[in-house]
Image (cartoon, rainbow, N blue to C red; front, side):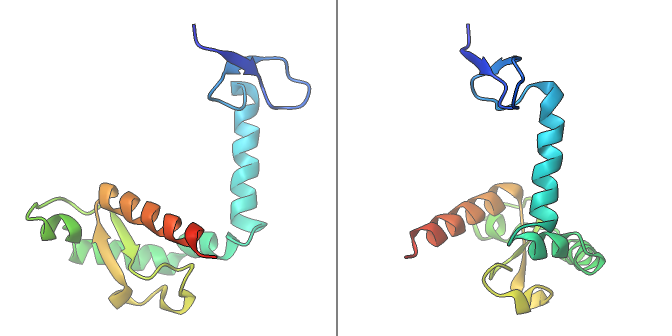
Length: 127
């Protein structure tokens, strides 16, 4: 039997699996709060709003139509469909190049997640 604990919502006594934070009743409220905070009330909100903008959606859709193959897979000799338009220089690092096509590359989900993980690791190691 998996270990359980109480829901993190104040006053809720519902038991949830140990690797989850909220019961099904309170999970949706928590997700709404996190989404609102990320989109409107945090240092990240400017970037989140950019990724929802019409300009970015148009550019990324057009870029994927013109570059349908993952560049990292292609370098490895594999042809795989690109799923994500990635900024070579992250928006967080260089806001002015957010709509610059020369700063974009088409990646599959595997390579995009690996690149993002490496960038986060580098950023956390900087003093």
